[in-house]
Structures are given as C-alpha cells and as structure tokens.
Image (cartoon, rainbow, N blue to C red; front, side, top):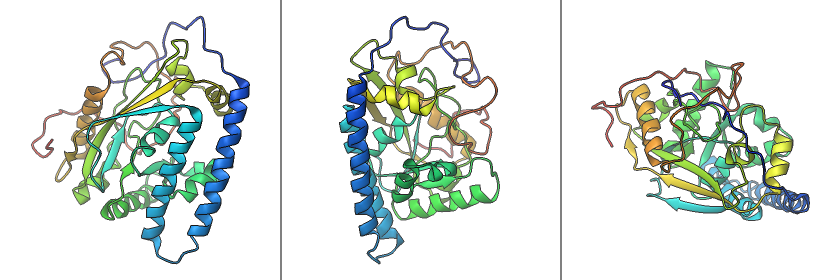
Length: 308
C-alpha cells in the first residue's frame, strides 16, 4: 500500500491454483437457483399484504438475511463473527473485496446495501435485489440521484433499519484498504446515527485457494467465469469483525470517513495487509462498484466532533 492508500496487483503469481470441481459447481448453482425461485415466490405473495412500506422493508430484511445465510450454507462458507453487533439504525462501513461481502455481512445482520442502480436490471440478480429492497444509486449522476439516495438512506435509518455502504467505491484483492469516500456519510450525520466500522476478512483451508483471485472480484475479472470457479471451491471462511459504534453527531464527513477507514485497518487481522503494493487494480481509471460521487481527501484522524 502506498501513501495514498492505493491497492496494487501482486508482482508474484502462484504457480498452482486449487482445482474447482465442476460437478460441485453445477449442484450448488442448481440449489441456489431453486432457493432463489422459492424465496422470490414467497416474497411476492407476502408483498400482497397491504400493511405499508415499512412492514414490507422489515420483511425484506428478514427475507434477504435468510437467503444469504442459506446461500453461504450451499457454498460451504463458514462465517465467524467477532465484536459487538451494531445497534438498530446503524450506518455500516466495511472494506470491500467483491460480491461475496454482502452475503457475509447480510447473513449476520439484517441490513440494506447501497448498490449500483444498473444491477437492478440484471437478469436474475436484479430480481433478487428488487425483492430485497436494496438502496439503489446511479453511479454516474452526481446530483439529483445522489440526493434521492441520501434521502432513502436517512428514511431507512430513521425507521431503525441498518444501511451498509462500501465507501471505498470499488473492490480490491484484500491486500489493502482504499480511502473511504465521504459523500453518503452525510445521511448518518444528519440523523446522528451510529456509524459502525466493519472488517471483512476471507481465508481458506486449502492454501492453494488464492483469496485475491478466487474470492475477491476486482480488476479485470469476468463475473461468469469467476463465479463458476468459486462455486466449485470448498473450505472458504469469512470473518466479520464489528467495531464499536462511532457517534456521528456534528462530525465532519471527511474526518469521519478517514476515521472509519483507520478503524477498519485496526480491525483487520494482523498480517492480512501488505505495507507496500506494486500496481493499481484499474490502470485505466475504471472501477468495479459504485462511484460515491466524491474523491477521498486525506485529513487528520483526530477531531473533537467525532467521538468513539
């Protein structure tokens, strides 16, 4: 990791990779598809009950937690949880390696995730995201859509719903943590909502499973190929570490973003990060994930308006 917090590709490539079993991958894929169809059908029936949007959101959180736990069970992923669970109405700020992160976090605590709006239009996955009532953000609209998303986050937090946003704005191989973008933190600050740093750490029993390539989804990975290989791997472990809530009342969002990143770095297992990185995951400037509409700015980590 360099002084700016950028992540870079490893200069060394493993000679051997773990074998992905195509039969296991096929069975797991079929099980996940069947599970998703059953859950979608049940959600559609329950949503016919005219008991208001808030009740629908509450059911959606339970629905998505059940689906995520079951999906991780099908994948054979073991979840380990450390630290105090966040209080109701918390804004969650984890590091980000890829599409498995929401499954790990959502399987532990019911929450809505801030996701790119175009994912709602993806075949299959889009239906799941809409049914689970996630928070959608247009990646390339820095004005009206960001304001709409911020309003949605505030409304959910005010109703006691936890909201999770990957403030790095992209995914990495897990060797370092990028600077956190502060824009969406304004929603939590306006409500004085607790903000919780979360460290997500992936590991595997088989040393030939390369977390940076087989679990993390970043740089030029192709989703279908990456997901199919992952479906055929076994012995993957996810450790979710919750930090103590930070009081956001009156905080400067840039200072708060820097403090959250520092806390996440503290929570990550010693030895899981590199001190020096050697290349950027997106040399052309592209990135996977959501553009959170503000560039990160280095700021001091001490500020009397941010309390821990």
